[in-house]
Length: 314
Image (cartoon, rainbow, N blue to C red; front, side):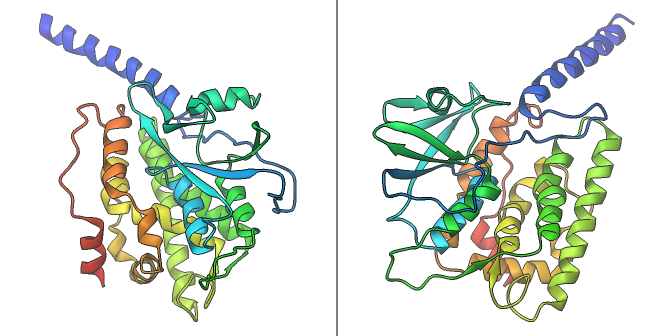
């Protein structure tokens, strides 16, 4: 009998402690639905001027929002115009740190503080900044704006680059809210109801994308040219088998059920330099170890390599 009460009390304490941890990792509304904090943006027409300073793109190689920006950086061949700086996740302290100090800063939070920007939730990546006479100017930490800012820069590379066109905002919102955020709404759901709602919306959105692709008269979502919709979709779907279907319980259907999406993913992965934005070892290490509330024992499952997954689908 004593063990029975001990187990019950332990479960209650663990659940309370889990909620405190989740509040730090993933804030939610009162219904238990994950709610992503808003980022910092600038009010302009997606053009930036680099005549008076240096532009840096700060990213973490495990973050899907960072991968959006890396994709545009690679596809547009912007290595001369924008310097990419990789940070690593400090799992113990739950923050990003520089591999090598930049302008004297060791931690991303220090750079945010120096820039005098109010941090709504925490110091986040990706981050697009410029330095003018050692003064930090935060251009944006919102990936949806950063990819447009990067796309507005004229590349001086002699290599041919692909065009990235704009597209219907409603579709971008669908991908962003129900797929990009949707997998996190599944993984970070606080209760059964919020999880089932997130899963329903996630797979309904995948069905809609599958239908659009089946009508497309080209390799990409909207035909012959890449759009922001392709850039939005890839980082989530390339992590699917390695991360989201396992750790985030995105299990209603296997991704292989969506034949057109799989065909599209293979083609996108084969775009020049896209594979260089995929850091599968870092993905597995950071997700399975950093998200302690979802994986307390921090065991990384044995998984096929990303290239093996793509090869078997081809």
